[in-house]
Image (cartoon, rainbow, N blue to C red):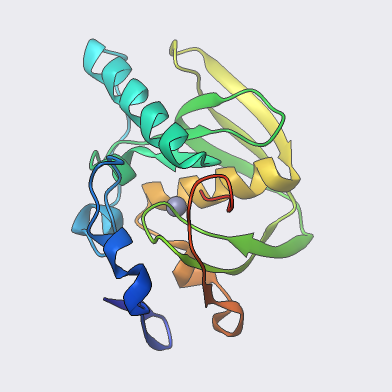
Length: 185
Ligand code: ZN
């Protein structure tokens, strides 16, 4: 199981390779092509979209994750769910970042689609986000800290960008992703 980085490749240790083959969690794993596609806007909230949201929530809970984007369950639509610690879970459709803080913070990230790999990614400390809520109403959110990090990671997914594209390669490491021991987006 090779992971391709901007500057080279790394190999998953044998003890973690089975995570890339599992499907009972409903999550599409690297290197599935859908993870590299640019997702399309959601035009209308249909029963299919409601079902997709339910499916994404189930996968997120399976791993006790912090966030999930629709391409991670195989659907190339611009929709993600974020569940920052001690904050309500939010569903956001067609998100757009309209403002980013100059200040960046480097912190640890993982990804449900790239199980067992972690590394530090520099992201804007705060962002202002526009989009629609799950009822199709326009929303604007100011996010900071972990919530801002999750939203930036998930919006990257909608553009086919993965955290390994942005991570500082010197900080990458492998660790068991068993639920509740690690936080993954
Ligand atoms: Zn991810």
